[in-house]
Image (cartoon, rainbow, N blue to C red; front, side, top):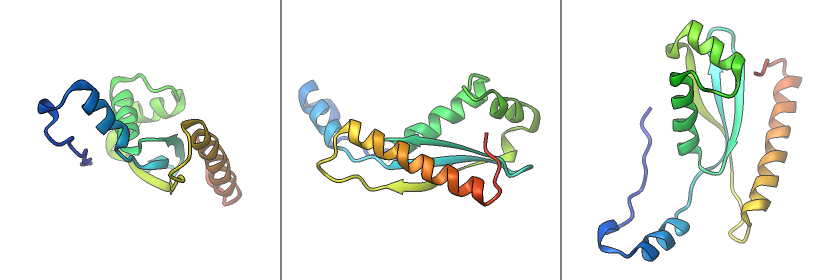
Length: 126
């Protein structure tokens, strides 16, 4: 899995304040990603305000045996990483004026909508 992180132009030539402001202006993918167990089709859903970072974080946690979902971690350990697929389930397009707390609320509602739909369609979730 290859992930692209845009670089801040002239990072080392800017002041810390300029770099901080540039980082705040960056737009990240917001939404829901899934980790799919390819052996039994079971899904783990997670929301994030930065999907690329979330992929890396969950992948690292699973590799190190530190993931918060113990059932997923156990399956990972037994089946191996080749039997899991990371993908974006859906992306949320927040309004330009949305605050961080508004985005979190939207993500929570978005996740519940997807969870309910998947369960209604007979999918099994972690």
